[in-house]
Length: 284
Length: 218
Ligand code: SF4
Ligand code: SF4
Image (cartoon, rainbow over all chains, first blue to last red; front, top):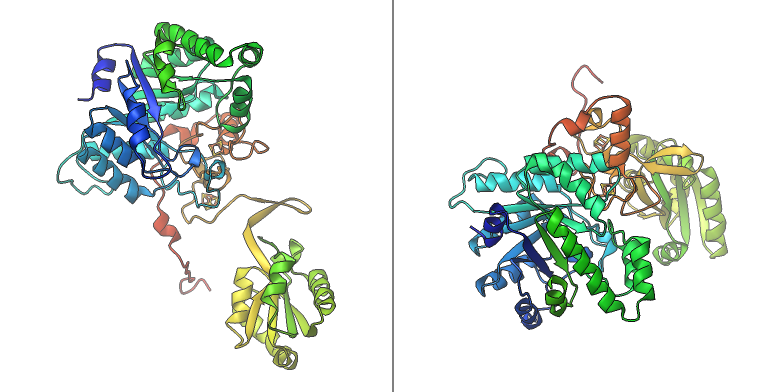
């Protein structure tokens, strides 16, 4: 059993963080970063995040897992068809990776190889269904597996998406398909998160709130324009613009979010984008 | 219809550099309707080729260039002009180009890029609404195709990139799933939201497609 699944089952407040594989084969910086994850239960390893080509998330997750860092393997439907997804999942299990974050994935258009053909042979609901099948000992066509993987599958949600009911229908499907926890897109407003968590209550699946460290007003505007699903509210952009030390202000905003998240949901997912050394301050 | 557009002229120029005498072929169906390979465009191409110092030995607009036998017949009617040419330039979709290339020994240069099966929104505005997946889900999705009009072809609802009902890939267009959701609501039914849609059967779309009417149908 992964620590993440145990702590969530125990009702503890969990902290997850994330790490992006390198563009290249040098894993040393990633291992250094991993050492900075103090007070973190598990680390997401991103999968060609933002459709930018990197070393495979499975490879880095396996290496981190072997060196004692618990990981959450992110797997998207953008770059693999159903055969590749199944075999990567079995491969992940062979490395002892249990926690999964199963995603559709950002469109290739956003990344550094926009000419690539996006795959999307499955969507995230179907990927969750397939994972449930593997855990029950069968592949997608019902053939028995020799050696059955154990996973703790999670899914993503964007609590501020509108129309809310439409977004939530998909979330409900993900739960039916075996999502055992949710990590959300970066959230900034307590009210929006409360609405989402209240809707989740009857489904009984824990929610981990996405907390993004924003270093400046400029970065906030960039996120608003370029990152699908991220909406930094105007008042926060203004706070960052006016701050004499925008990084300190960004840390303060993240810390405030963590504080209310403790009342609202079951954990936070810290997206510090290379500033892992700030994690202790955010959690302080 | 099949939407196509003229290739960039530099590309055409390069593709034609080895030839000086050309026979031109247009298509009276789709390529005419989307103003890429009709009478008018074939004429413009002829003018441009002559500016480039090429000879045009003749031209024909085939009723439906994708009809292999009809294309053969029309080319036979222009046997001499075709014979005089070094190559044929075809302003039709990729199907049309291949109907021609399967009927002549000569080099065939396609002049268009074929894009998609397009609906006409209004004159000159085309939209892809069906990508011919072979396994149609429209009856569950209120007549709106997510395979095509969702940029990711998702089958179980919107992705996390939907913002205020717009698509992450192009904020100018509506998220397909918002449109499906709204129309299902108007129709007061759950449709595709009532179940988890299983993965698509892409074997229905195995390439190349082949289809024959059964005996008695043709
Ligand atoms: S589901 Fe979409 S792509 Fe497939 S046949 Fe129907 S309309 Fe065309
Ligand atoms: S925003 Fe909507 S239409 Fe665009 S990719 Fe996501 S689900 Fe598909």
